[in-house]
Amino acid sequence: MTGDELAVLLEPTVERLGYELADLEVRLGAKSGLVRLFIDKPEGIGLEDCEKVSRAVSALLDVEDPVPGNYRLEVSSPGLDRKLRKVEHFQRFIDEVVKVKLRFPLEGRRRFRGKLLSADDENIVVEVDGESYSIALATIDTVRLVPDGV
Image (cartoon, rainbow, N blue to C red; front, side, top):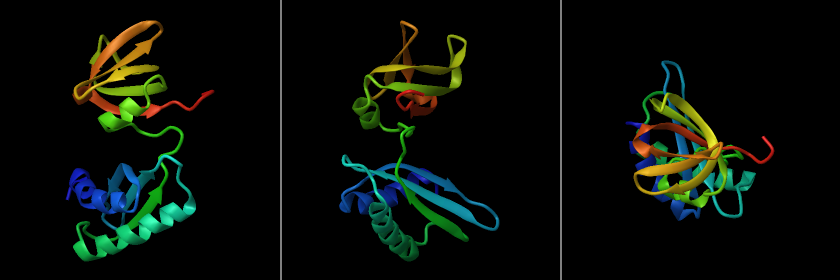
């Protein structure tokens, strides 16, 4: 099962508990693997939130058994330098500073750091040193928020 398929399986449970599945990381290995969920809600995430989601997701994974072999389940907040993955994430963080890493160069660059100006279903626009770059979502490897003062 791919990470995207696992996200589709887990997202309804996470949302039913009142959280957003902000990101999912899956690493499977010969001896042990890792399934890491990043959850969020407007008020922020605390330890009790992580424990609540961990119990529910663990039970679901035990029943569905979608991950082969042994793995460790971790539930965490997305952190200050959270990844932006969905259009809704980009739109929520317009006017914030982001770091963008591309799969393929755009105008000779693969990395951009600047202010997120806009986002739609196909592109984001980032301002770097007074110049705007329209970046197709399909070409993006990762986008992370840059915490204030960093």
